[in-house]
Image 1 (spheres, rainbow over the protein chains, first blue to last red):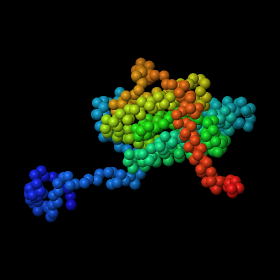
Image 2: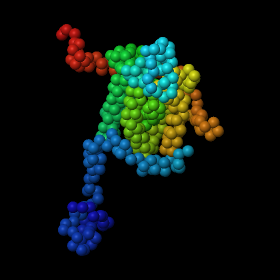
Image 3: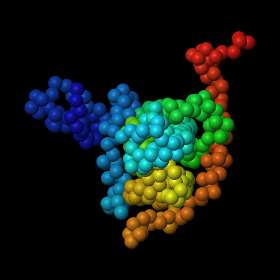
Length: 82
Length: 312
């Protein structure tokens, strides 16, 4: 099962119809699971899903800060270091 | 080049040695050395070893309070590295004629020193980031200058240590960046930690010394003087601190283009002197921890060295 997308519908019956329209028109699906968003419990903790068994925290390659640094600089409103 | 020491008086021997060293010559443990050179290297290396050993204690306080598993493992790994550095440095010092037992005894008795920064408490997770980033950065500035020390075993050890410290600094900077990209209260926590650590950081390299009287410099045990190290630290790190929106708590801190140096408020040298002589806020507590650890592990030394006293 792969996540295909989402539909905006007032109830389950219409949600099923919309889901078929978007994800079942070309026989691309065998089965569709249609659930209200608030029924989904999400697990995204990297400690649990990707524990650092590779010990990347010991290596320079374990610390790619480029995006974090750009975000922090943008927030601070600063340009290149003085 | 080998000097014919056997045909010279001791003074000539020493003069030839110092000329060789001043010209960039290297010294190995089994070379003849004047007593004062040997004593100077020993003192320097011993303080460095002590600092690595004591330096883990502030960070150790946060292993059980790290916010994620990854951070806990990174912090534990860093601490293991630092103790390893202490072992490497005590090994270098032992070859100069002082036993490890004596060095640890002198440390615990307060007769030898360790760097000022390790006498201060930690108050929040932000301290962990600031220490790993900026304290380690200030240390690496010193240690890089030592990679060309005249005393070759020390120089070799510095090269290994510098490589490992560079990963510690990345870890520290990553902790700080994560906090700065977090909530307003996380950013405030970093600023508060910086406010407390800036003073000790500025004191860390020591007061400017008179180059003419600085024997460690003259004998190339170290390659740069205290002020050069501080200037290097400021040049690299002030921009990196400020670009995150942090405010350095020194209104006088600015770069003088004409003079080619940073100006800053005079660090509190009295505080430095008081702290390194064991009067820092955490000096007594941390030395006591080491004393207790040593007592608790006596049975291991007795078992390995066969020194156990008669069974009680």
